[in-house]
Image (cartoon, rainbow, N blue to C red; front, top):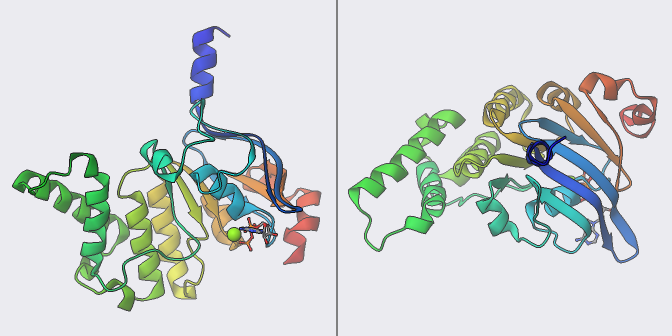
Length: 257
Ligand SMILES: Nc1ncnc2c1ncn2[C@@H]1O[C@H](COP(=O)(O)OP(=O)(O)OP(=O)(O)O)[C@@H](O)[C@H]1O
Ligand SMILES: [Mg+2]
């Protein structure tokens, strides 16, 4: 390959882990993880409780800076960059626990996210043009998340499923190129799983996505690639079909169900 081709190949890797290890005292939460997440791929991260999934997402999001090894984004070493700097590079992350402003309305929550997105240009006085830009972002997210009819609802009073939909809207409002989702369906009622799955599918379009989810049907349906973790290591990866039929995976994980 020419230098230019090598450069392009590296840039097609949205996120790369090189020998990433995270220790909490004597415990290795992640041990020597090496993995390339290709640009535009939708990756499902699975593994038993305590396997190191959330820790790996934290490492990638810049919330776990104490680690060994290297994290690269489109070829650049971002290991030392904090969460805000990574967000500026297009890495967006949601949490296992909902992060919304519960006393504010849905639209107010989204407007704050829109202001943060445009904060570099935030003027002292809000011009009509700037105001329209914020309103357009809010309306786009209301539509995408299916929350238009709930725009004036108090966020904390909505069903848990709708709160999670809002949280996803807050996460993708800045249009991250890379989306890290930690159990976006956790705690959602049975009847809300279908719509929530569809929403994640929509939010994944055109993005590189890493999704942690314990619901096997959901993660197998949404992911192009499955990455299986156990005891801090990546023990297998492949298409949902390959992973389902991998005997090692079945014994450490799927077999437990
Ligand atoms: N801040 C911390 N301090 C000490 N130990 C931690 C810390 N965070 C995680 N751990 C430990 O690291 C290991 C991996 O935890 P992690 O949260 O990454 O697992 P997980 O795969 O996300 O599990 P779950 O499916 O339950 O969310 C666990 O043994 C956990 O107890
Ligand atoms: Mg976790």
